[in-house]
Image (cartoon, rainbow, N blue to C red):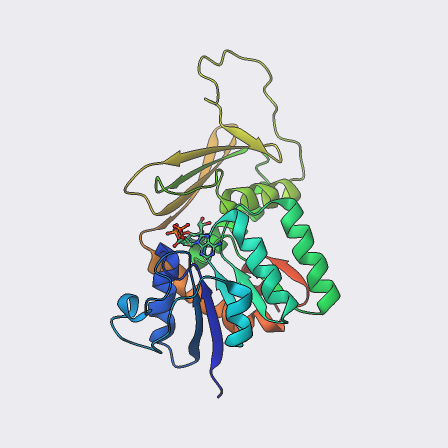
Length: 268
Ligand code: NAP
C-alpha cells in the first residue's frame, strides 16, 4: 500500500509534536511537510527522537505544499490561522483535517464554499478522542429525554478559545436532539457576572482554565428527582492520536466540508 503523504501544520506545538511522533511510528504515513512559526529551518527529528523523515520545518503552508505535495494536512495552530491553512490546501486539492478549535462561522462558510467549488473534501474535528465523540453521541441520546443540560469543560490554562469546540458542538447536538424546550429560568440574583456561565443553543456552558488539565468535559442532565452525568477525560495528548490517524486515512473519502469525527466513526 502506498504511504499517505501528510503535512503537519503547527508541527512544533503541543499537538503538532505528538502528531509528528505518531506518524513517524506508523508505516501507513509519510511526513512530507512540517510547518510552524517556531523552529523554522530546524529538523523535526528533535521532536521524533530521530525517527521518520528528516524534514526541515517551514514557515508557510501554501509554499510548503507547492514544494512538497501532500495527500492531506492536519492543522493544530490558532483559530485565526487555521482557516487560511485549510484554504491554501483546498486550493491545491489537498484535503485538510482541521483540529484547531475556535474558527469563526465566516471562516467555516468560506471553507465549505471552496470545498464545493473545487470538489475537495475537508474535515473539522473539534475532538479526536474516540471517548469524547462517544460522549457527544450519548449526550444527543440523553437530550431527547432530558432537555435540561449544562456543560462544564476544563482545559489547560494556555487554551486560547472558550468555550471549547467540543462544548460548542455538544451544545448544538443537544439542542438539535431535544423534543421539549428546556426550562429557562429568567432573573434570579447573580452576584458575580458570568456565574451562570455562557449560553450556546440554550445550553449553559462553564469553561475552566487551569494548569494540570489537558481536555475534560462533563455534561450534566437534570430532571425531577434525577440527574445524569456524562464525563470524558483526556489525560494526555496521546488520547487524540488514533482519531487523528483515522481522519487522515478517511478524509479523502468524504464529500464537502464535514464537521465532527462522528461522521467517520458512525458512518454506515
Ligand atoms: P500550541 O502548543 O500553541 O501549538 C500551536 C503551534 O502552531 C505553535 O507552535 C504556534 O506557533 C504554531 N502556529 C500558530 N500560528 C501559526 C501559523 N500561522 N503558521 C504556522 N504555525 C503557527 O497549541 P496546541 O495545544 O497544540 O493546540 C493547537 C490547537 O489544537 C488549539 O486550537 C487547540 O484547541 C486544538 N486542539 C484540538 C484537539 C482536537 O482533538 N481537535 C485536541 C487538542 C488541541 P506560535 O507559538 O509562534 O504561535
